[in-house]
Length: 160
View 1 (cartoon, rainbow, N blue to C red):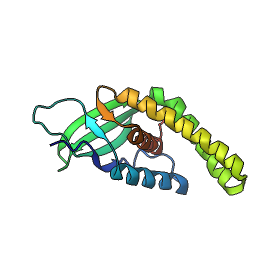
View 2: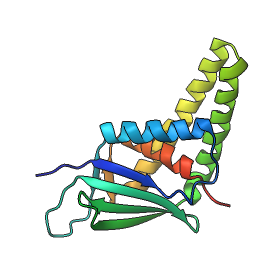
View 3: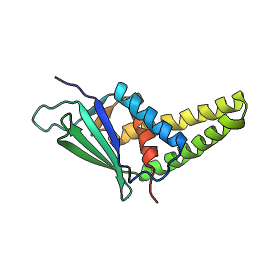
């Protein structure tokens, strides 16, 4: 029986470079929403028929995103490594637009906030599509899952 979803997410606390209340809130919401509703199906067949659910531990090491995928009981399933080079621009853009958004919330008009939020969603959508492309042939995810996973990649931030 297939249960292709994530049931637990952990981020490597040592990897998180930047913390503030806004980023912590993004992290909490992304993890909560991800656990509530996601599609996550590793593609490679290991011959034992295991099809989920999964625990996911994310970290960044030497410019690479490490996806430590575990079975429901916590035993190892697969480790994926994605280079972060193709994400640098979109992460930088996303952080810049988020900073603008959080500043706007405090002092801008509703129309200005809406404009910035639309731009933020656009960058987020672009990043989700990029993540889905990078995971192709490795893990199947839906668009909403990719968006939430990208949020967590931003929380981890790219070193350097």
